[in-house]
Image 1 (tube, rainbow, N blue to C red):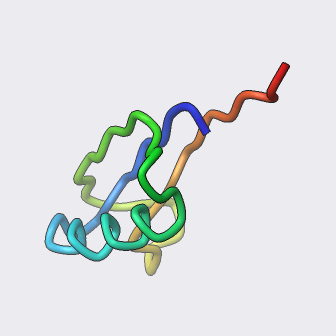
Image 2: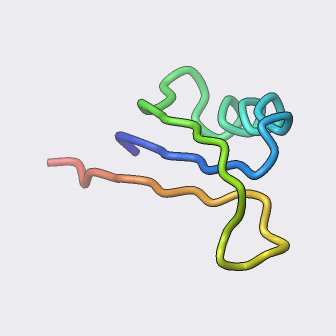
Length: 57
C-alpha cells in the first residue's frame, strides 16, 4: 500500500481505526488521509476505505 483514504461517519472512531492500521501495517504505515463524512450510499455503513497499492518491481 502506498496510500489509504478513510472516510468515517463518526470522527470519534478515529482511535479505533488507528489501532487497526498499526496492527495491519506495523511500523511502515502508508500515507493516509482521514475524512469525516455525513453519510455513505449504504446508510448503516460507518466507514469506507480507498487504498492505492503498488506492485513491487
